[in-house]
Image: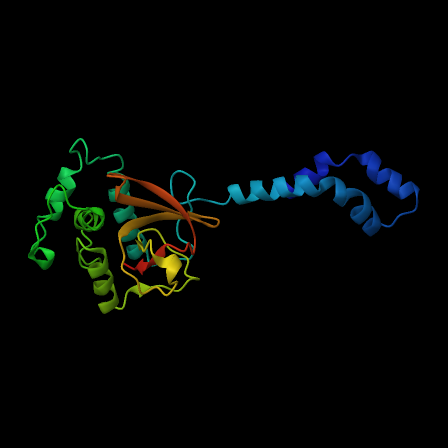
Length: 231
């Protein structure tokens, strides 16, 4: 509808009529007269079509790239909503402490370690969100990124295919040293929860991002992506 409306309202009738008077065929009128004038308009119309595609994630980020069982989609969104609800908590004012306290209620505590308020808390953030959402049966709790990767691998729920299209609720692990290896075997230093995708971009909610809970936008298949834990 958008494309048809564009051609009906934007291309002057006089252009088409002049072509007919010169004896040009419909194809020649389109290729030599209409198309050059419409090129930029076509791109704008396509962009509008893209933006009008139904979205499932607030804020313009697309949700599930393919259909999932209703229960799985609901569980994933519960994790995303929980994590996003904590956006803005900070380490410097102590507002992040309730997340650490929540993580420390996990019984038994992973590795028997009680996370302190001064520890790096990105993995504890995701684990606490999973606890709050009631998803620890499908998301293994950990305060260490690399140990959590091993847990996902043991469950057969690990993905590091460069062509993988992440879904909301996937656990995205980073390796900042990957430019030197590109082998997806390095030590992960950071982790976040996928909120959604938009074209070539991924939106991620992260704890301990610059000492607060906030969003990051990265390229799909970015060099720093170590892989994904799949709920």
